[in-house]
Image 1 (tube, rainbow, N blue to C red):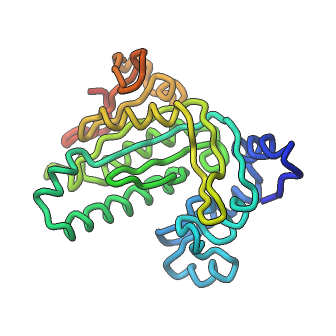
Image 2 (image 1 turned 60 degrees about the vertical axis):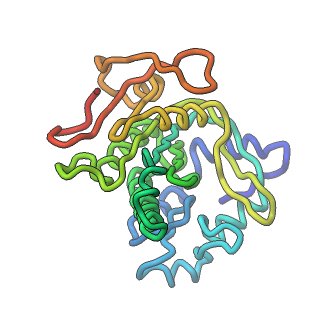
Length: 272
């Protein structure tokens, strides 16, 4: 990564980097993504395990001591150059529905194993669709899709990732899902950048667009993906899909959404 020239130029640097990035960084990320296997750096996709891990470590691509979700070289950059910019991006939130009830029916170790399996599955799906995992919060995955990591079709990839995650958790299987998951996808303006202090720095997204995606996931039923009309248009979804207004917690106006479902005996995702 090229360093920003100073504080005055930092926001413009981040805006340019997040929207276009460096051609070499994009090529490197594509190569790293093809190497097995998870877990990976959330930014450059360098694998932390598997046969390529020793080589990655030789180039500083080991988990950072202060943030194991990114490699040491990426952490060093974001820790030194805090900042970010407002860009258009797509956001995917997905969580296990009824996790409290599930936890009551399992031992704590069984529930922990279920969450670990969900985390690993979600991470793999997000990386396969050129996204970046922002964080895991309890039983929920938060993922970002923006031009640097996802290209111009970030909305399409976010929707495809949501569908793939529901399939990977068994929603298209006749036996039913091994984890009941609902998801929300939204495309809009958000601040994306490096936050925190020297003890812990990470790249995250902030703003109303992120909150909308979170509220959608909370409202989605198991096997359902709620997609805002903004994301549906950006993803070029079928314009004849039925839209409906959804009241989201904390939002004064209703949000227009389309509902996609993944269920057994259906050839693909479709509106509910």
